[in-house]
Amino acid sequence: MPQQRIVVLGGGVGGTILANTIARTLSPDEAAITVVDATGQHVYMPGWLYLPFNGSEGLELSRPERSLLSHHITLAVGQVTQIDPVNRAITVTHAPSVPTIPGLGGASHATLPYDYLVVATGARLAPDDLSGLAEHPGEWHDFYSLEGALRLRAALHGFTGGRIVIGIGGIPYRCPPAPLEFTFLLDDWLRHRGLRDKTEIHYTYPLNRVFTIESVAEMVTPYLDERDIRYNVFFNAETLDAERKVLTSLEGEELPYDLLVMVPPHRGARVIETSGLGDEQGWLSTHRDTLEVKGHERIYALGDATDLPISKSGSAAHFEAKALASRLIANVRGEDPDPKHAMYDGEVMCFLETGRGQATQLVFDYEHPPHPPRPSRFYHMEKHLFNRAYWHIVPQGLV
Ligand SMILES: Cc1cc2nc3c(=O)[nH]c(=O)nc-3n(C[C@H](O)[C@H](O)[C@H](O)COP(=O)(O)OP(=O)(O)OC[C@H]3O[C@@H](n4cnc5c(N)ncnc54)[C@H](O)[C@@H]3O)c2cc1C
Image (cartoon, rainbow, N blue to C red; front, side, top):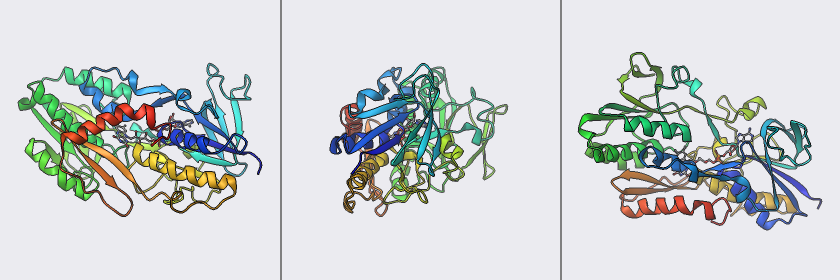
C-alpha cells in the first residue's frame, strides 16, 4: 500500500489527539500526517472559566502546538482558506513571518493534497449574530476568550454592587455547563468580597429549564434557589440595548443590567462556510457514529466543528478522536474498521463546578443521559487535577 496523506485541519483538542494517536500506530511509511493550524498555539479553554476570579494572566493556558505533537507529524502553521473535496486538496495561506509550511518556499499560498482529511477547526465567536453586541464591544463581558476573561476580571474588581446578568447568545455554544459554573463561582466570589447582599445575579437560559439536559437542570436548580440566584428561563437573548443597559429576549422580556456577561453566539470556522460545506451556522453535517462528513468521501470531522447532537466539549472531541483514529488506521491499512473501537457512541465526561469548593460529574452518551452525583469536594479536586494533568496526557492521546 503506498504512503497515505492524512491532513488534519486544526491543532486544538480533537485534531492533536487524533494526529498523535494515529502517529503512534502507523509508521511514516504507511502515512504522512500533517496538522495545519492557524496560530501554532494550542489553547486550553477550560482554564478561562477561572480567570475572572484568580490572579493568573492565562499564559499557562497555551503551549506551542509543535511541543505537543509526535515528531512523525508535520505541523504547518497557516490559515486554511479553502477545502476542495473534488480535487482532494486544501489551500493554506500563511503569514510571511511564519514560513513553516513544507515546500511552500516564499509563497503566501500552498495547496496541500490529501488522501484523508479531518476537519477539526472548532468553533468561532460570532458577536455579529446578536444585535448590539458587535456595535458595543465595551458594553458587555465574556469569559469565552483570554482577553474577554481578563477584561471581565477588571470589571468585577471595579464592581460595587447592582445587577449582574448572564446571557446566552445562542445555541449551540462551547461547553454547555460553563455559564452555570461561572454563575456559581461568581456567587462565591461576591460573597467573599462582601458584595453579595448588594448584588442580584440573574442567570438566563434559552430553554424552559436552566440547562439543556433535564436531569442536570433538576439537580442544579435547588442550588441556584439556595444561593438566591435568580433564573430567567425561555430567555433567548435577542438585542443588547446599550443606551438603556437592557438585554431583551425574543420572548419580549427586558432585563436591565449593571454588568452584563454574555456567552457570545458561536459559528463554525469561516473556511467551512467559504468552501460551501456547512449548514447555515457553519457546522459540518457529520455521521454520528463514523464521523464522516455526509456526502463527502474521505472527509471526516470531529469536535466543535460538527453538527453532532452532543455537547461541544473537549471531552466529546477527545472520545471522537480516539474512535476516528481507529477508523483511519484501518482505512490506511485496507482493513475493516473494528466496530467496537471505530464507532463514536456520543460519550462525554465532564465536570460541573457548583461553587463552595464542590463540583459534580456528567457522564453520558447518545442513549444514556447523565445521572449527576451529589456535588462534592472530590469532583472539584478531580477537575482541578485534570486541568493540571491535561498538558502531560491529553493532547498526546495517552488517555
Ligand atoms: C470557558 C470555556 C470552558 C470550557 N470548559 C470545558 C470543560 O470543562 N470540559 C470540556 O470538555 N470542554 C470545555 N470547553 C470546551 C472545549 O474547550 C472545546 O469544546 C474544545 O476545545 C473543542 O475542541 P476542538 O478540537 O473541536 O476545537 P479547538 O480546540 O477550538 O481547536 C480548533 C483549532 O482549529 C484551528 N483553526 C480554526 N480554523 C482554522 C483554519 N481556517 N485554518 C487553520 N486552523 C484553524 C484553531 O486555531 C484551533 O487551534 C470549554 C470552553 C470554554 C470556552
